[in-house]
Length: 277
Image (cartoon, rainbow, N blue to C red; front, side, top):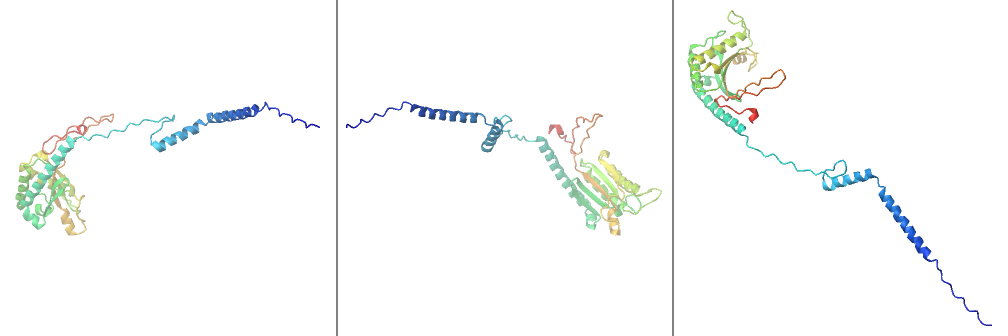
């Protein structure tokens, strides 16, 4: 019996469906990914973007996530302050003049300085001459003793050629006084200061430069418990003031200040006002 001829395999014409299904699946996955990317939280994205920009570029970012352009601030150009230089030159001239005055006073008062009855001090305000009142006045009196009158006139001769203000201060100890002429230490200290002022004025020092003040026992330099301390506190101080006087600024009812007047140095030089500085 003849062998049966093997039947031919017939072709599968539906294999394209497999490729088509794979293509559709990939296309679906692509659209899913695209959708996911399009729905990113805008607020979180902005925060991330701002943080990255600030961290890596150190550039400020504005509230809408845009970079803010910051222009560098120009450094101020220092201009020479002519007013300060002028004022410093005046101060330096004053300091030199003060040292010269102190030297001249030490020379005319040398014997009393050696006895410890007179001290010449250079301070930030100028030169101060401290004179123990025991060599100037009798106890409880305000008349200068004749031996000291010549010494005070010599001091006045040194000061008459200067332009600095002069303040004469009278000081007492804490022992009270009660006489017909001096009811208290206030009157005694004030009259003693005025007596020295009158001597200076008679020697030729202009009156507008002179001021007399009585402090009584309110400004001691030593404790008043011991006799030596009280003797030290009874004194007359002559201050040659190098400070530049300041002109006052008038304030009106609205609390506004008017333009200040120019300051004048003791040497007569007009200094620039604050507004010109």
